[in-house]
Length: 231
Image 1 (cartoon, rainbow, N blue to C red):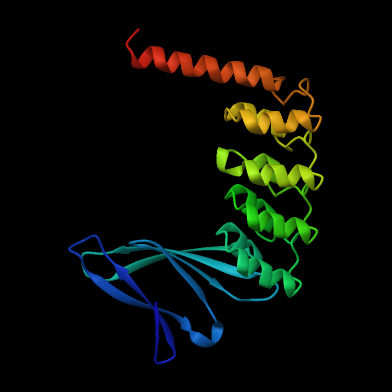
Image 2 (spheres, rainbow, N blue to C red; image 1 turned 120 degrees about the vertical axis):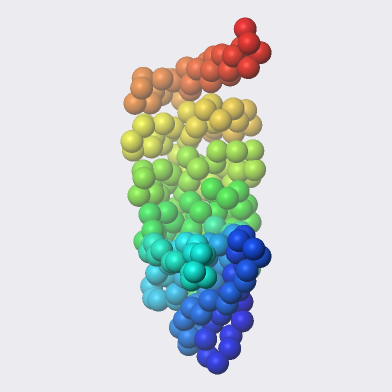
């Protein structure tokens, strides 16, 4: 990324013959944030208050040598972006300047983003600044529902410490965090929720308890193993 003649330019490399191009985006006065995610994809965000208008650009190099762009717009906030990427110092700075930790113009709050990425330090900062641990996303999920791998255990511990409800069901499937832990085989998460009083009898929309989900997962794995071994 470079600024030349007042324009923000991003260098793109093509997998077709190793060709490269400098793509002009917006003038520097708009203070864009640009992130090169892959060889031919770019994600950009413009700082508009109170939320970013995030533009995702998909690029492909045509045989004629021209770039074809496809735009996808979504709303987000600086706090959500920094929390999603685990930038603790940036999160701290934004919170110092009174960024709202519960704002979720794109469907998920900064706390959802931090927990989904397993960013423990960001999660703790947000909770210390009164982020709601039981806030549901646009999809009806609380931050605990997004703790779906071993890397998120620290975030889960912080959430329950700050009052996250371990029996809070998701809106669509009525799954509790214990169901989620069972689905993903997360023993330590399940033990944590049980220690905080999670009910083993709560059922999801398919009338399954967490134990039923665990048994179903074990059965599915056994069937896959049998098929792979030709039995």
